[in-house]
Figure 1: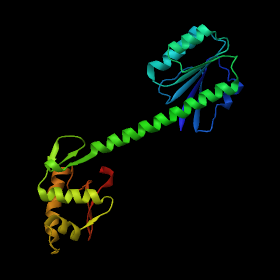
Figure 2: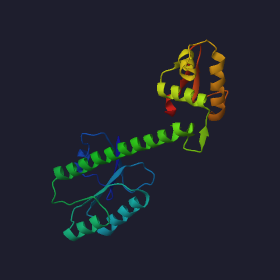
Figure 3: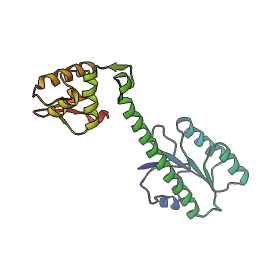
Figure 4: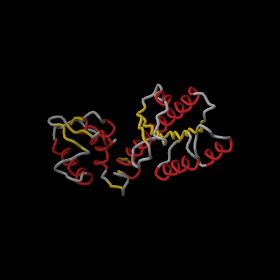
Length: 229
């Protein structure tokens, strides 16, 4: 969902403005004056017959608080006026000589691109957040947690953590962990694994009594929290 702020500066809603609901999900915010923190992703200034200075003033107020696409409609808009509006940053300038269909299509295409840019930015932010949460570094037998200073582990601690991390979101049984850490047949001495996990939690968890990274799966083994992966 993208939000389009429509500023009807003269207080009139042009009939054709109601057709600005293209094939993508758009929330319309009708305004007579620009309102800060309204959450809009783009704006369409309907200036009608207003003076160019009034339209420019509204545009500058928007850009003081936002970095987003803005379209402008002014009935009597000469080539020089359009050039001025483009020079201050408008991405589309319309006048009465342009067809309604052309204006609507131009705004539609711009909103499609705006939606894609928002989605791409959200994906990039999500990837960056995940990268900061947890990173294993095998060369140094350490882990970066929340992109802070490295936490160094013993060989057995690193083996255990690496195994759980690779298996996530599935749990790893005591038997699987024993065989991977000691490379020997399972002797059912689960306390040895529990001891390693305890020391891991001391190093990684904020609260050892309520672990969030390495969780216990009762009567089975342990699980690495996939939210940290």
